[in-house]
Image (tube, rainbow, N blue to C red):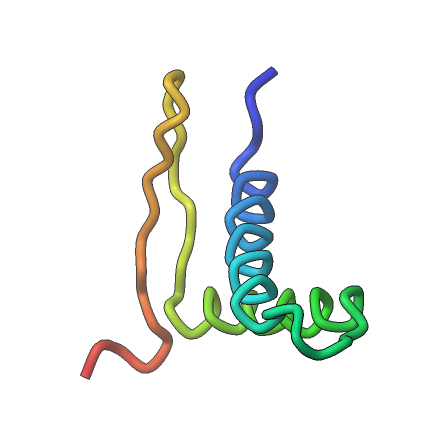
Length: 75
């Protein structure tokens, strides 16, 4: 079953969220992991919005093409 572009965007956002959570949680300080994941999930969404990241197509081999169009441009 192939995934839709919105499903793939969510997957990409979750990957960024998980990476940020792992980087922030070095295990030395006790943290509320669910709270941290929620926070970085919102940060991930903000990053995608600021970049203007939009998934535009996916082919049969699982390659996804995206565009980056920041709302304020590149300069």
